[in-house]
Length: 117
Image (cartoon, rainbow, N blue to C red; front, side):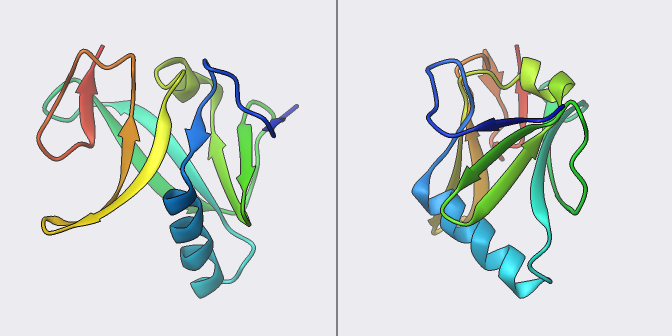
């Protein structure tokens, strides 16, 4: 059974207003029925890496975060590595990208998509 977060606690994953706005823009440009799936997998230059895909299916073990018209899915295995994180969207001189501010990460690579615990 999936879990929906309305009011985040300190150990739960949150989505910034900027990220929610960008997710909603991406979804509306697609077909409107998609959700952003954030995952963690082995690999990358620091040991683990984040993945971002559009998905139209929730699974029973998904954490579902709904904010300002945006829906984010995180599976239970990935959630173990992301507790207390904030999903943000950064648009600066280097480029625009989703960024995970993860308090569990001991080190991260320069690109921000790879980390170690």
